[in-house]
Image (cartoon, rainbow, N blue to C red; front, side, top):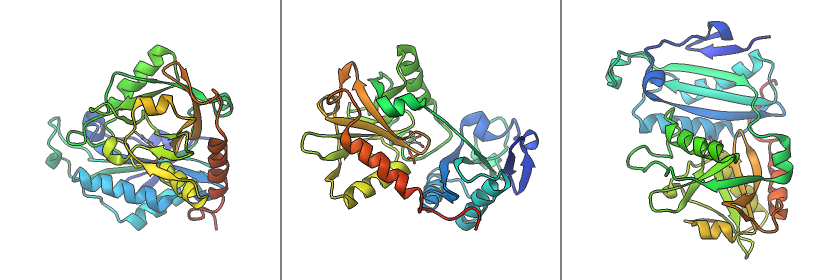
Length: 293
Ligand SMILES: Cc1ncc(COP(=O)(O)O)c(C=O)c1O
């Protein structure tokens, strides 16, 4: 059965969910989005996702046509219409249809759509054995040019990096910022565990998106009494870490066991990584509003 999509105030079958070729989301990547997960009949970290969506929109001066509460209801209702209790939700707001010039003032009404479906980024094997990463030449966007904190529809920077990883035959890439510090992966945040058992991830200022999964993992770690630091890290820090993993809504928590040919720790997913995977799984059972009451 096809999906039911929310599009501009209506729930329509996927084949009727059509967007104009003049939409600036398509023509210019002018818009914002969220990838959200549903687990156990709940939308995980809904408030955080919607808040980030509205902050991204404010940042690109996109006037949202509906309130945050209305947007949350759209997410829940799209799940209900698709009988979805576990899955992946894509919420998108574009600048809307305009003319062929890039001036956003020509776009009079943002386009809003929501898809509730599923996603599997990596095969199960990678979650068990860990994946390999390489550092790529493509640098993460400068915050003063196209801020990585904005979850915009403009993903070409990340796609360039992903292409480099693909060409190298590895599943994911580490992107550095313009100063050479580690920023993040192409669609995930990066963490390491150093030899004093401190969990470290780059700050937003390093060119990382403030990931919802990242923040949840940091919260969990603090509660467990693990030392957590947001600080600049170099490739040296990654190569000499004992554990490394990526976090993202779609990828969840995935161990990385080799970076630029160097095995991380003993070359196997680490103990703390497993613990965090398990704790995040537990959290998804109780976090977020119910889809079906
Ligand atoms: C560039 C980038 N970094 C990090 C993340 C992880 O963020 P989150 O955990 O909110 O999905 C994403 C995914 O949305 C992303 O696209």
